[in-house]
Length: 224
Image 1 (cartoon, rainbow, N blue to C red):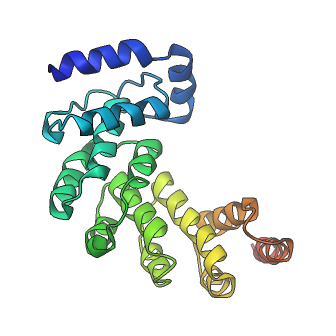
Image 2: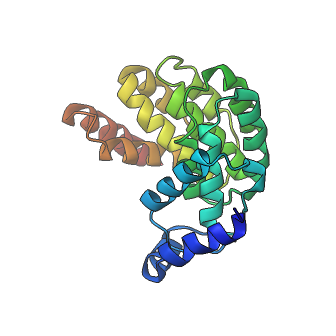
């Protein structure tokens, strides 16, 4: 079965010009965006896996290609092989959507926590974000100190700082009082405000908790 012909047929059937234009407003990528629905990508991934396609043979020419390859990698059972392929695909990840969608498919990898922590020291913003989002999704509940590691990152990229803020917002759900103490020590004004903003958008915090956060934000603004 010719892999390039298979992909060509897939995109001919599923590319959507209107969705592609909409996605381009949300996603800044150097790769072409074809506007394929995630549900169709998931179906295609199942087909590729059921037919035992070699991950190395899968193309990385457009946004959807990278998602497909990332989703297939997420299904690999051999952990060492999975890490090897993650390393190969990381250079192609250049936007928040590709990063977060692939990370969401990387389940049952807590034994590989050290690898994801190692990404935090990278100088590449989406390597760092990849590590932050994976740690937030998979380790924060069991190891609250993960939030401290995430906050040691000193990278000024917008998407890194947004991921840090997202992690703090999620930490409030796990342990509000502990996270409040962490937040009070944050000097970065962007992360401080975004963390509160994202936490207050969450339906998982109650109104009293949100009032405390808004009051803390108000106090800091008065001091400035």
